[in-house]
Length: 248
Image (cartoon, rainbow, N blue to C red; front, side, top):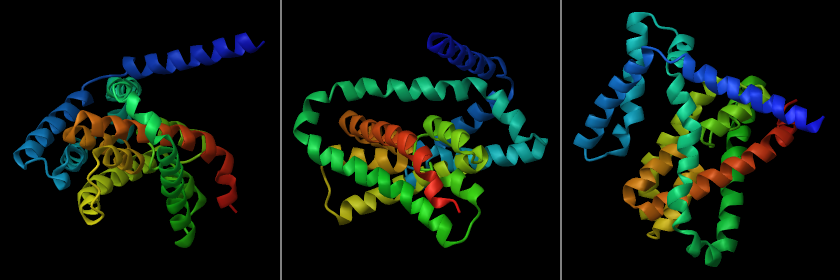
């Protein structure tokens, strides 16, 4: 019985993956064109955080969709291959991390504390702010996983009943805020160790922070990958089980 259930689950996953790939169509070109413009702008600016490709590409895509009257569902479906690649791209980040494994043994205790406290604060701060401002439970459920990388966050929100669209915006804003503020915070705290810089970027700014960390060095990016991955796993385990404590 268990084997048949696992097989059915695997079949469902494979069908979902095929559906993502098979729906790819012309809106993909809109995304690639916007990103190309955004990447050019980012490089011309000296890679200023405020001009991160997401900051430029997102409004370009939005206004283009408004101009041609393209709804979000059609746009999302048309970018099926990019949605599918989110998972493999996240897993591939483990490759540079594997080159830093020797350094982890001596950092195990502080790393564990930093990951647990950082991930806990990232989640609880969002939940407490939602309750403080009296927002609805739907908003709470949608923002709960805002500090986790998109593939994991979307799965969590589907499980607990939030809105994917709201989560997508919150995740992007969280990541962008993280990379914009990180440099100033590192300077004020005199944090120069790129391992800890990477870890903090990964935990607080997920994939966007990890990409920014790789711009500093492969080692910084590797530790950002570690922070992003473990924070995502812990959130996926803890959040669905504890979200009921915040819903009246």
